[in-house]
Amino acid sequence: MTKKKKENYDEMMKRVGKQRDEIKERLKRKDYLITVRNSGAEMFQSYKKMFPELYSVPCSLEEIPKYIEHMKTVFWTHPDLKKGSKVKAKDIPTEDKRWGITADIRIEPLDEKLEKEYVSASKDGFFEIERHLKELGVK
Image 1 (cartoon, rainbow, N blue to C red):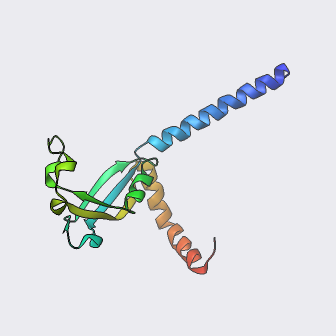
Image 2: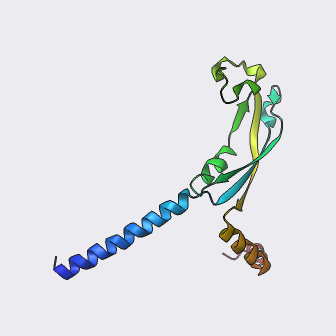
Image 3: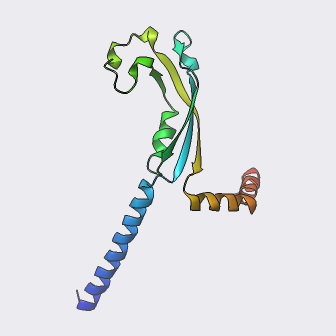
């Protein structure tokens, strides 16, 4: 490899490394707010259902798939399983478990710049146009 080609290659690899670092940082930044709505799991009618709950948590792009996956499975809770409790999950009888499912999540921008872009896009009719294109079967 000639000296010039080596210099070009090294420069390109620096740019590639910088780009990858920026992407990794963006994936890890908690720029989004996920609002989770859990409710009682209907498939466990003969058991206790969990009480509905709604909570929000700052989230990164990397973490969003975990919340989506959680919507695909039922889970159980019990009041004795709070943080710091000495009760073990395996010691809780099935009939005392409260079964639930994540019924919905909402993802919203938490980062101020993303929020302003979102609001601006809404005011400019971006989402209205996208809904119309979806109805037409475009894209």
